[in-house]
Length: 251
Image (tube, rainbow, N blue to C red):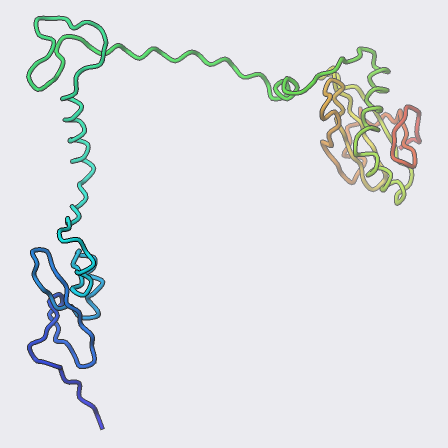
């Protein structure tokens, strides 16, 4: 058996969509601008709310008079209004006007021009990145003798966190080959290489940097990857990973 939907009253229609109100629906009465009463079905209630209509049941909670929200004006209209307001404001203190009339009708100044904006100051060239890094940290004195540089570099290496790693690898792979070579292009730096047959590590020791003197810069697996100039094994490593001056084994 098919049930037929019948309307409650044939003359009840939604004032938004024009659809006849069906049995079982719960329409609500809204107050539109101007005090007009409008019947709105359940589907059109969000649209009525968006239009600013007020539910008749909630009208008692509203003030006696309320102001309808004005539509938002476009960006161009607001810009023109602000521009007109600025033109009507009195001028700021500045150079004396020139000419018979300082202001013309409409508030536009006719006798002088705004001072030109001074050119920006030239930017000083930034120092190299390595120099900025040193300038931001405490810098210590750097020895000039190559042997003293190597001894000082090994002392800084032993005071860093890296000997613990060297000691751990030594327990697995045995005693490493070690070289410490002053950098000819950077007087304050010494390159330290610790190598085994299966791996190697290259560190940069900056004798002038008191904050971060030792940095790991490269590592690999094959000894042939190391620059021959850095394979002059002139130091050695102890079981604790600390390095010392002394000839090690030949690679």
